[in-house]
Image 1 (cartoon, rainbow, N blue to C red):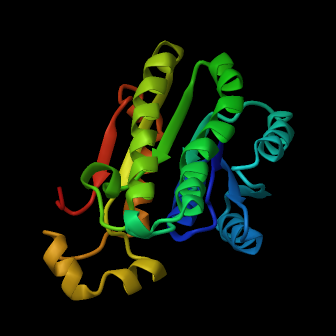
Image 2 (cartoon, rainbow, N blue to C red):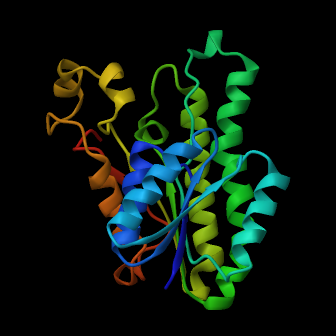
Length: 239
């Protein structure tokens, strides 16, 4: 049974990804940092449905803490599926943005990506099979007012995706990014009322976490072996 790690697995999209991968027969590590109880709840749902899952808690910005947590997981063998889903918003227009806001968002999306991904690569390479999916955002493709830090972080993830895909292509490991648009969640309901969605999204609705998870599930499958280095949008036709 292949093992999968989903960072930020306790959130709405992360939980849907975890459930999809478990339904596909993967043993899923549901990562959380500040919400361990949410991760445990996702694990309970997966186990109740007959799947295999375990909660893991660490701060991906803390390199030493992350390395220790991953070393413990690697004792059981390589992790062959990695979904870098963890990310944060700390929005402000650039003239009013504080240095801490810039740094926090960059730290989670980019330094966190490195801290989690790099230690897993050589064990994955030895199996000559792997799937890495990085969760980005439409903001990285189109920009968004008040999200210069977030757009920059996710755009940086695109460059890392394409470069890492080239490095690992001959090892049977694919690396792709998924860039969601407006996805239904408690946060988006407040940020995007129905009138705004009707105006912004040609399909006149928000996407669902399950739709994002289904795309990622495919990219993590055997059938997606020839797809790598791609930034795949899922946004209802917004761009």
